[in-house]
Amino acid sequence: MNRTDLRAMIVEEIGNIAPEVEAATLGDGEDLRKALDLDSMDIFNLVVALSLRLGIDIPDADAGQLVTLGGGAVYLERRLTGPALSG
Amino acid sequence: MPSLGADMAAGTLVEWLKHPGDEVRRGDIVAVVETDKGAIEVEIFEDGWIGALLVAEGTEVPVGTPLATIVGRDRIEPPPASPPAPVPVLAPPPPPAPSAPRPPSTAREAPKEAPTTAALRASPAARWLAGERGIDLSLVQGTGPGGAIQRADVATFSSRPKHREGIDPAQMRRAIAAAMARSKREIPHYYLSHSFDASAALTFLADYNAARLPADRLLMAALLIRATALALPDFPEFNGFHDGEGFTPSEAIHIGFAIAIRGGGLAAPAIRETGQLALPELMHRLRDLTLRVRRGEFRSSELSDPTVTISSLGERGVDLLLPVIYPPQVAIIGFGTIRQQPWVVDDRIEPRPVMTVTLGADHRANDGHRGALLLGRIAELLQEPHKL
Image 1 (cartoon, chains in turn brown, yellow):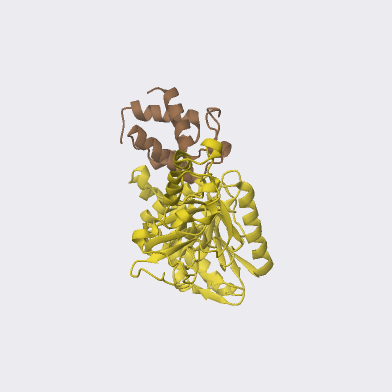
Image 2: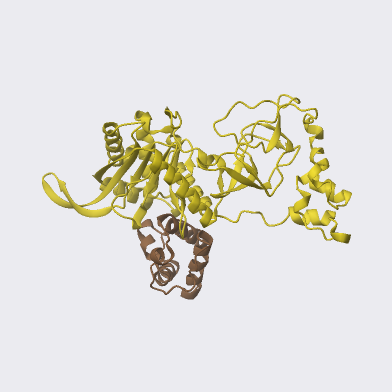
């Protein structure tokens, strides 16, 4: 799964959590919390959804990496392919 | 029609989820009602069987109007007079009339002779199905000869997309306006504020979450609600209702948690029996509630039940809020956003994460001295989070 797929997956999961927002058109570096008015509960739900879907753990300390689409895709790619998978 | 808020005058019965003859248990969702706050699921507070549906789908009726008769589990007829409940979700059945509701075995047939449908052109099969499903035939679009309603039309109507369109922002704004105007008109508010070092709570949260998979983790909000629920039993004058005449404390603690709706508006439904929920269960309920509120799906009791409310601004808020009480409650507790600031620790100044907890309280029911002790107790509990 490449970075583009992962970005699309994040967009899709945001759509499940907050159907009323439009995430697809966001820039890679935009802060989801500011641009889409997502709160800590939304980010919590996003982390849960992505971790279940990809079958990986996403440490709580890394949740901050998922607040932009670009950063999130890079992070997830690294978690999936990196040598030190803890989940 | 249940009262789903202090200022609700009427509601529209959108959909019956139970039908004549259906067995129901206390807590079952029996109908969906459209109010100023959006579509709300109505619970039943008795065991028994649905006798007759007294209000057709699509009809707006005043609060207090009986929606249906319930045939009690232990008696067949006449229908039992319900004991007065604080929130009559299904109003007591009307006084025994010449045509008393039938026993459950035959109650299913009752609505098909409803006079409202008599003048419509509809096939017998359509009438039967409409009666069976408790559908008001006048709402069904007929496609038969001369616009007559056929069985298939009723079937189509009955399987149409459910009317849970979520929240109407204009209605929600009106509901908030009415409740808050009443609050500021009637309640002599006083406000208190207390700041405390939140590092213990943050460290506890980080340690707790580091050892768990995402779905089992906690948010700070769960700790705030838990601490408040544990503090309240010693401060009963902040937990209950004021009806204008006097204050009635509530034995149960149902904390309402204010949940913001993206794009405007908020709702503060109850987390029932908050004090009895350990942190994992509390977090689970909080997630479920947030999800449902933002989809516009909450239950009638969740809106009318809160005995006190918490408003937490979360990560992107401000230092402190001066919250407005939701009548007929008598207190609301606010949590500001944690910020890093200079703090005196052992005669030295250190940067610390600081949180400010505030109280908006009703001076008819309680006083500032006790309010200060309540805030102090909540802050104390949050500084010993392993006790939560």
